[in-house]
Length: 43
Image 1 (tube, rainbow, N blue to C red):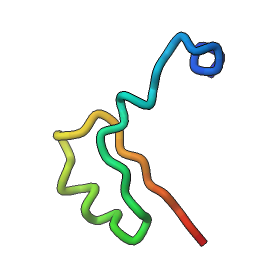
Image 2: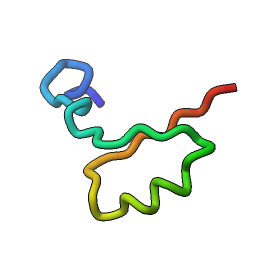
Image 3: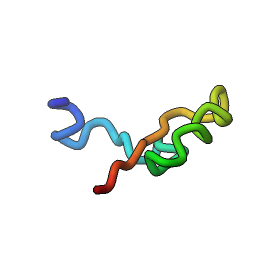
Image 4: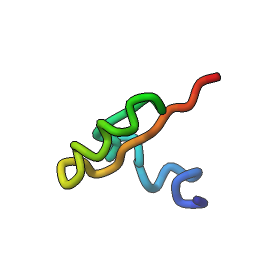
């Protein structure tokens, strides 16, 4: 966390998929194809 906060590690370029919580099942389709998926929860 400290390295990320200091800007030494860029995590954003590693995010390959952004999914809404309602589409979480689609995330399993991408298994093996993604580096990091982010699930967005909105109320």
